[in-house]
Length: 449
Image (cartoon, rainbow, N blue to C red; front, side, top):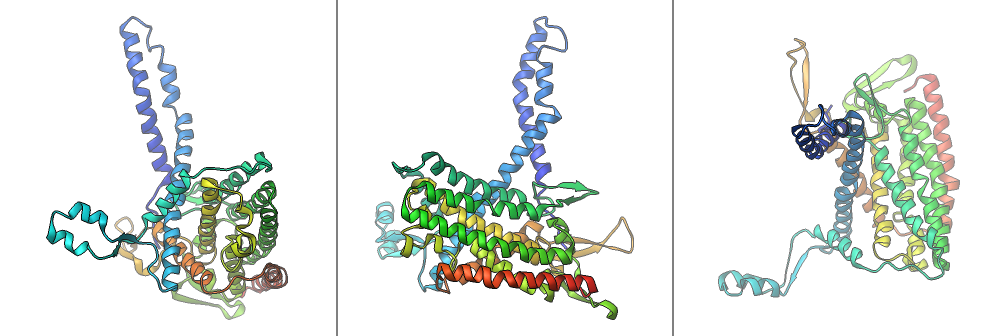
């Protein structure tokens, strides 16, 4: 229903080609000088110039550029936005302003505007302006300035490696997650459409790496609080990965694909129920999102709960419960290392929301009412859809809506104990997921949906 605004590979290749061309200009000048001084044609630097501007190096640089564009898009932009959304939203839930630009007694403005009475007078009373968005940037700058301390008795190598494991596995999630038909890294083109046959499986594999890094961080810190926090975090995350995978299996049984692009294409058509021998029922005003499939309602609920647990958000944030474990497995981390492991929790929440959107909410496909239909001159008698808003907008909007629900739940319910967390995962979510797989198998076998 909508088109992609960003052609990541096209943009990256053009940028790489232009950068390498600029880099070859001094060599071109040197080659020209050599030719003017009697060097044999085509010049001594011709081979080097051909290598720099050749297709092989251009493709390599394009891959590096594409990775950096996507990671900056995910980390620099969306990380700051979701942190700001959460801080403002839970402030409203607690009936307070939240982060803003506090001018206090306006001494700063009075020093600047004091000589002008008509302008300086309104700022003599305390005032609060702005939205506070730059506060997240200020917090990052503050963490950069703080000292990075390594405990004396810690296993230093593992202590330093653990945050890298957590950060790299989280960043790999965004390499594996596509944002539209044009904004993706992992996949290939087949007959003009992107495909990634094992995309969902790769995303699940990336989610499973972080618990190992958390356990290593808790153990390597040589602190009883961090060890308990790391063990509790690993127990929680590993136990919730099982229902996470099982809930997706039920969807795969009905859809027949692990390709995120194919799953989104399947959900971009009008909602249709195939009721076996009774024929098919089409609901033209609703998309074929899998959340509308009654067989997969259990899978959606289980996936939603497990994503909250995998992101260690309230009520499943017991691994870092400051009231019980000081600060859990992050107790001994300071400075930007603490900011790294703490900030990447939000990135895992973004990745989890993106996974939910792809599997159940149509991914980056937009609604019918956001498309203008015009006569197709190439095929008379047909209409050509012109999307008003691109796929990246719809996908980002869905991620933010899901994240707002995460925040709403997190600041509305109390934290639950570790035994309740594990009982919920092992005794309730796993049986529900297995039951949903059996239900999806029956529905697929009898052709109900």
